[in-house]
Image (cartoon, rainbow, N blue to C red; front, side, top):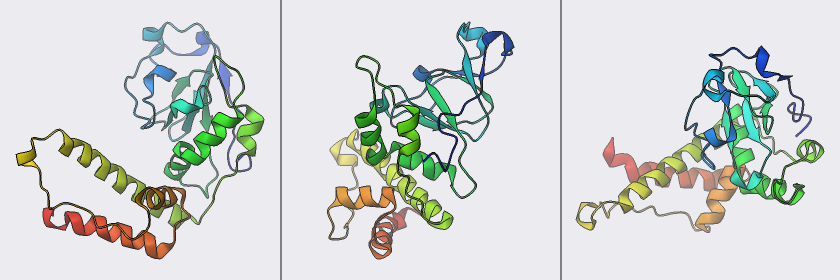
Length: 215
């Protein structure tokens, strides 16, 4: 991955050089697995005393600390972050959202956990991060994979919402007839970009057909 982004190469600054109204991101602000930013705080609100990494809008922000927490997000604007967060700038051939999908995947998370050092505060080291293998399909296919993952996540959220409804309010007609590949394997391969194009098309069509009546 080191040939595709600046993994481990950062710009650091001391608190005195950070404007009081600047966004300062800490690990606690990033929701695990989803990467949602749960709160925005400025330097004045943080009263930070430690050095921070500089990041820019569009950077992929990866937490190297406790990689099992799977905290990865994309910067919505310029700011500063904990030194445990690495701002990653990928080359032009990589769609940032695809990079996020890969960094959140079980393939990379398992790799990061296995290569981490430290017992109480495990971290992924710079060299191991740079040596990680990164699947690189054409840009159009990266965008297709991201679109597929977003569709599946939207479906997942709808299923979670349905679970909270009383049984009489549920629409029992909305059941996906998945292709004849194990569902977990199908979704994992689709997210990793190595599923066959035909099977990928079948899965997308199944999802489209299920929601066709809602349009």
